[in-house]
Image 1 (spheres, rainbow, N blue to C red):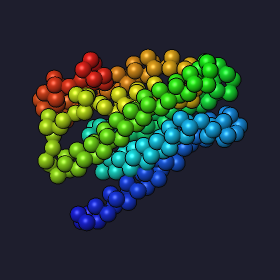
Image 2 (image 1 turned 135 degrees about the vertical axis):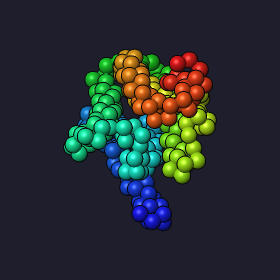
Image 3 (image 1 turned 60 degrees about the vertical axis):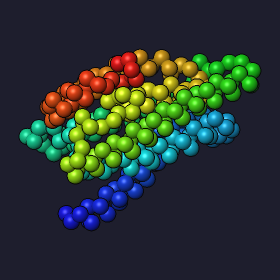
Image 4 (image 1 turned 30 degrees about the horizontal axis):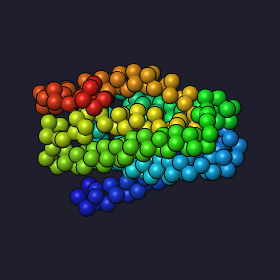
Length: 247
């Protein structure tokens, strides 16, 4: 494919990915909560919730725009799948983790909406106290979403450098000394989401989420070690996996 055609095709993929991201973002968050509450008024009557959902949809667009070209042009984690697998099995393995992540997010938002509707595990107190917790949750979720956007955009820039052969993992400057900042950003965002929605029950799922993330990144790093060898070992020695300056 000529260079100009590939560039235009990539721009088209980014646009389609962003549009798909917005639609998925709304389907995973706003729609299930409105459906569970059986009305839009309780969802959009809280300023913290309105701000959060607007941010969520923007970051969903960034996520879709960053990931669709990555799937289309190839990724070392996807390219590592055995060539002997049939096309159907390769597609299933490629989409298994994204599909599981989307299903989890749907259930996480649905659980928060259900807690709202059933009045279970909701934040109690006077109106000022409740609003303080909601905006605390909004601050935490916003920090996670900003980090997610930064990590995705940085990753897209690094992929472009790798395509031109001017980058390798040992030369990148990881944010917060993390090898997997998107996973950390997801954890931070998941802490804030229930608080924005006025509940705390879904927070009990976080230890399990962390264990699953730990397993996923361990499997991913096996592939990266095979691909980049000593350069990635050096990168590992100077960074942490999931938690800044800790793990």
